[in-house]
Image (cartoon, one colour):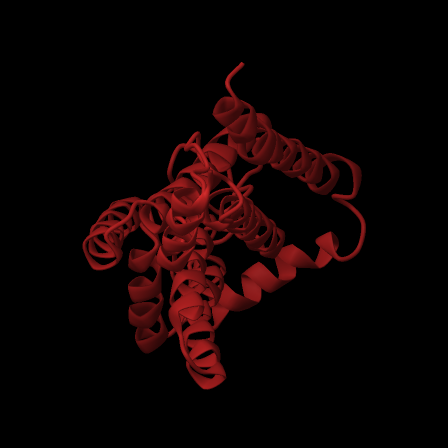
Length: 243
């Protein structure tokens, strides 16, 4: 097996497979083993309280955050940002990292929902329920992977600590807002969105280590360093004086 393929399997595919196993196990524990144990016994009460506190203003704001993490918006923003990164940096590492993080979380999310059939909260749903189950939240997972991934890239390019903190604070607001929104709109339990942070955040970490890490050569031969000019002159001088 080529070295590049071995690196991809070891540093990307195996960690994602492990994450999928953890997500499925976590879903089984929440829905089967500890469903009648604290803190999962208070989730229904929290869902009803959020639904009872709905107002026109909050409904509109929640729709904005929910739309930011819709499938269409996630695909559009990922494609646009990846294109901008490619044109700006003139390389593929950063665009590939972002697309891989978003794609990996989507794969883990879809396979987890197939294994964990959890009903959505027993309150009025403000959105049309997708065919997937409630665990985990696909909106939240996608928002974490995309906007945290962008925060990682911008923080790496930032030249000051203040700029790094600013990018992180700004972009973390989106997935947090999406998580609260999905619960407010009656689409997910609190444990659904918490698990989604694990999914999206871990996918970002896996792809950052695999793609942004410069020790991964992606099959490129490591070329020897070019000799300095003064070394060339010294070598020619010794050769001319040699008997």
